[in-house]
Length: 106
Ligand SMILES: [Zn+2]
Image 1 (cartoon, rainbow, N blue to C red):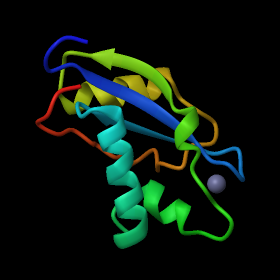
Image 2 (tube, rainbow, N blue to C red):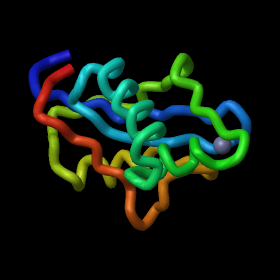
Image 3 (tube, rainbow, N blue to C red):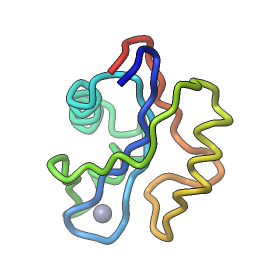
């Protein structure tokens, strides 16, 4: 991993076939901690947190897939990847994908 590189990752749901796709430049484990924190404290903050709080839904943080890496932090890169790795069952809304870019590097 080079400096400033970003990772696009997918997190499957334990109870349904949906998957959440996000992007981060944080350490993956830090990003996961953030997701868990959001799920607990800010259920409306992102699609993942909202989904996790739905009945019987649970994200499988042990089975995260790295879909792509990029040195480009621009939104367009994410949108491009979002299309490339288009999943039929995304938790994210296609029209408003979560942009999860932070200043820390992976
Ligand atoms: Zn689910």
